[in-house]
Image (cartoon, rainbow, N blue to C red; front, side):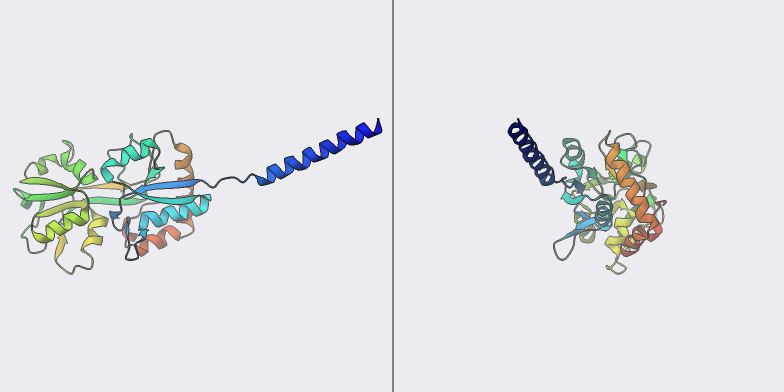
Length: 263
């Protein structure tokens, strides 16, 4: 009888050790946070001279991942395919100078963090000084952009766009600027932050018209229903505002006068 008890106790002990070893062997997997972004949209997301993806939004995403213990995956996407990428689960969010206004019900949105305007950029010697001067001119815009939506919307600036000779779409704003420089287009409609970045370092070759097309705000867009990830990102953004890191990055990318994030 004593021998049987010893055997049972021995088996229980072996089982306990095995269970402990199994438990120790299990490691919680780190969440991968995949950010979809336009790789040619400086200063928010772009490839630097070292071939690395960087920018204000991507550095913000890195800091958010540090706070939440996530691993960041930077996923460049075709901007006009962003909804397919999000809905298929290929990316967790769209984070790259993404306009909230007019899309409020299409995504779960983070808190707004940048005030933005849609503006017109022209050559400084083009003789175009106001929006009315764009009549019968060729105006470039990025495909699937907020500027294109604004210029196509009856409640936006479609009346203005109807005065253009042509509203020409480009895959990205780098290409649009090349065409503007070459004289293939007369003007480019775009976000003010991107416009300021594009014309900085080009001397006085280009100007931004004083009349803006509109004013809007940027946020991070998540798939409808994904409130958990949205809330974690919001909490981290507010922490970054409180500890000064958000303002530090805004200053680095020349966006200090455009931010609207509250702690």
